[in-house]
Image (tube, rainbow, N blue to C red; front, side, top):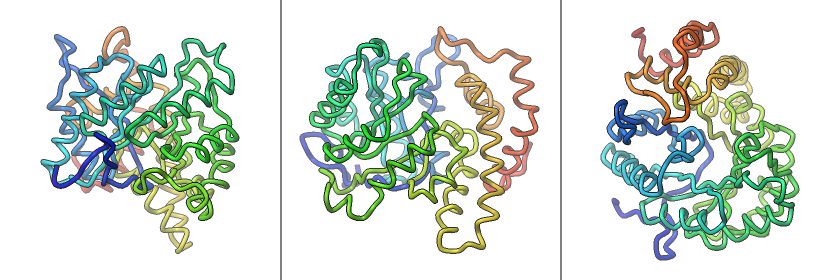
Amino acid sequence: MNGHTNGVNGSASSRVLTPGIFAPIPTFFLPDTEDLDLESFAAHVVRLAKANVRPLVSGSMGEAIHLTHAERTTLIKTARAALDGAGFADVPIVAGTGAGSTRETVALCHEAAAAGADFVIVITSGYFAGALTRDALKAYFVEVSEKSPLPVIIYNYPGASGGIDLDSDLITEIAEQCPNTAGVKLTCGNVGKLTRICATVSETAFATSHPRKNANAPFLVLGGFADFILPSTYANGHGAIIGLGNVAPHACARVFELSVASLADAALLPEAQRLQGIVARGDFTIAKASISGTKFLLEKLYGYGGRPRKPLPPIAPAAADALWAHPHVQELVAAERELSGKTAP
């Protein structure tokens, strides 16, 4: 892979985890069989890379819960081959590896490394949420990070983990005590939590006092929604992992770029605020349509998307028409077309 290595056999990935925008890539399926549509998947990964948006494979948006281990491996290999073939050999791949048990999660981490992923993102299992104490949750991430051959990003998403919501103290403790952790994604949408975590891990002293196992994997604090990219930058956050990055990659990446640049040049702040508003309104509207709505928009915009894997239903025709016609969506589409240099309807 052009001289790059992943975490197989203990070798550290040479690809660097840097602040920015990541998108949880949808898994596309063939309409008649629900088999993987690898052609659309590869094309989409490259499309986002060209917009400076990096891929997260087999996440929530990717319907990881509907995928077999073999399919997850296939998607990682397909993404790596597509990126390398398009001249993006330096773009890292983050793979979702959270599962029902600690044992299976660790196994998925090893499989992701063998397939060519560079980092993993791990959600807590919510099936027995009521029985998972604070100590049990901490023990889960400690064990997974110790046994994973790849750096681990903590995934805090109460909506997909039985309501489990890791607090800022616990996340900070894990970051301090587990050198193979490389960040956290906050799909709880809690900006206060993000600020508190950043107050510790984004300080220069943190990297000195708590060095990472892999020097290419600093601890990043990433939002899980597109509506607080700008505020999180001013709290010393590091970007976001967002589903909207699939629909409007140029717009999302531009908000982050302007946000960072405005720290040094305040004259850029009004434009950052303007575009953040467009992205935030679009994200709020599209997120309510979930995976099926995002896939519909991708079909509308780029010619691929299709349906979710059953039992998830497709978006209803009337809801799809209303989503496309929504002024917040149309405003976002117009901004994306302008930033990408495309004006076609």
